Amino acid sequence: MLWDCHSKSAAKLGRSWRAICIEMLRDCYSKAAAKLDRNWGAI
Image (cartoon, rainbow, N blue to C red; front, side, top):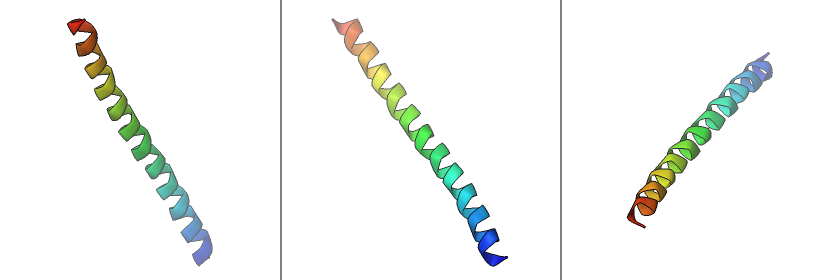
C-alpha cells in the first residue's frame, strides 16, 4: 500500500521533472534563437 503510493508520487514527480527540463530547454533554445537572430541581423 505504502509502496504503491510512493511509486505513484515518484511517477508524478518524474513527469513534472520532465516538464521542467523541457521548459528549461525550450527557454534556453528560444534565447539562443533570439541571439542568433540578432547576429544574423548584424551580418
